[in-house]
Image 1: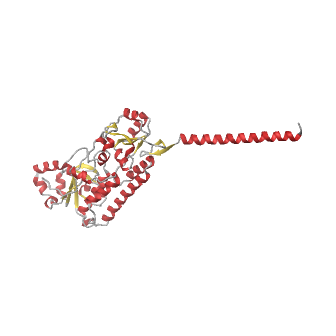
Image 2: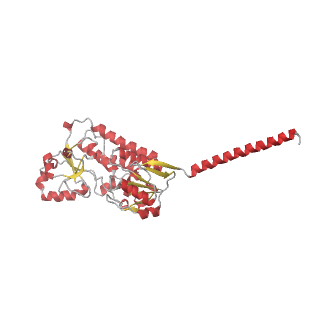
Image 3: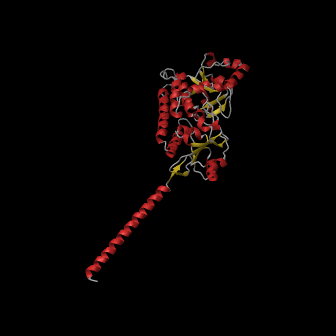
Length: 370
């Protein structure tokens, strides 16, 4: 074999070796890329700062605690395949349960719901949702995640205009791919807060009437003595809530005689508990008739917004109605009913005031004893 022929053969083998090596690299890269795509997942941080690994594509979810309501605000209730018994009640006092009634009635029950709710672990395991959302304590969240092996996310909004509410919606949008919808709801709620604050923040205390809210429901129905210090619909409009003088916060029972001492200018009552107020009136007319607000016909409704956690949309509507009554000049352009339906359309996807009114919960003046 001559020298030129030997060189030619060597070159051919070299070229073939380079080609084989290059092809192998391409093959390895392709395999690596495919592996990343098929096993892709993501990590999110929930309300308890827990790191939860989720699949990229979430098609089905289950809701425990009061989370079905927030998931409705977040625009993804259609992905629910499991809800609580409470979510299925279909009562106007929980607007989200009415809005979703047709969808919810056929879904698997995965818990009882309510403040002391139980959770049906076996049902969750059998249902196999991609993700479980829960508005419950951290230990229970961990327990459910451990027993079911299903990613379980805690969301825990604590107030209507609180950062925890915005964070819950933002997390839902991130997990469910409804970021645009959730951002719209967040920005709208923030705009309501700003509007309510702007209308009332510069009113001198000396020009504000004193107010009281009674017949507030918490852990059951209450009469006139059921009230609330730091009442959110009052706080956001800087109202002078006489109960705030107790230096307490939240729902409580107050001695009615204390209300007589405060003698507020305006009283708001929960219309669904007026039977209890009227029973008390029948036994003690002198007390009620001695109140300045009763004498002047300054008794109005505040629609109850706490039922299986907080109906945020009703609470915001309540703030506008209270503002209209307490500060008529600053709210002269507001029609409380139209504003309520605007709020409901953004947060629930439909008008809802008529359903509340038909159920006895409407914005109106009250005459105690009737």
